[in-house]
Image 1 (tube, rainbow, N blue to C red):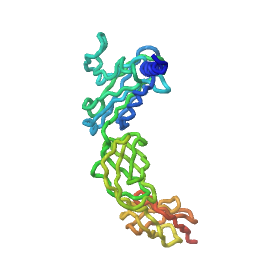
Image 2: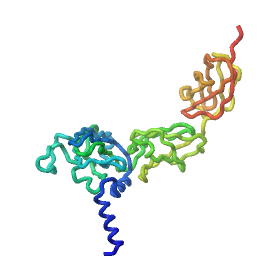
Image 3: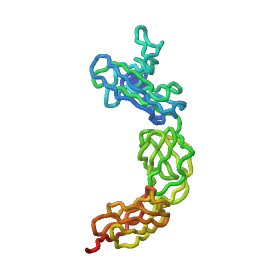
Image 4: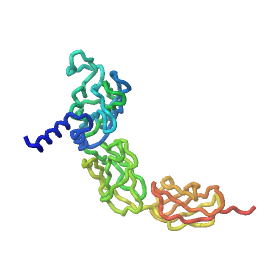
Length: 326
């Protein structure tokens, strides 16, 4: 046997006998990380058998979707348990347990699961109920040993048909669907050729921000998770609101001010006006003009700010606030 062949065999032997995160575990990263529920870290406090109870929470809309449970024993920075078992729905019966073991439910992970890898994948499609599914975990490991699990949706995300069809440059946008990751950074959101920053996600709704200056027009909007792409919906982008003038520019508290421009909301409720840092009640509005009342505020120079449909208008004209001499 040549020296190079012997070296290769030794390398392969180490890969399958050394505890820790192996190449097999890394392959699971190819799965879309649409995290529906997660548990852990379950941490060993001493060298005796440790027992933990938890729940896998499954939203109703995911019950019929492909689901996978990814269990991880230890990590690059923490050791795993010497052995660990994970049971689904304790109080059931399992025939795969060794003789003398307790009947604690369906066995998902056992003593042999992590012999070759620190991470295993279990297909649990159509095996979980909507709501809470109880799990029981037991294991032995030196103090500090940790075990984790994640429930992932395997299918691509999907956008609902009844979503907003119009948005405004410079404003947040909320769309609904299923299959989003609850971790915002794991959702790749595209509006035409431009990626959007994800602000929030809860799995069925996602909030993004359309940057100011985004060109006006209609674009396809879709969400992707590790190349698993949703359906696309058309989204019309309107230009950011803009202030062109205000009258009058010298104001008294209680007086009305007319703010002219473009891109304003057609209702008073859709617009907010600030004079300096003081909110000015909006008493009328259309797409080209807002009428607001000057609040009680200190005399002096102040800038006008308008937020229409969640987008801050371009332009901050300055006005002068004064009080009549008495």
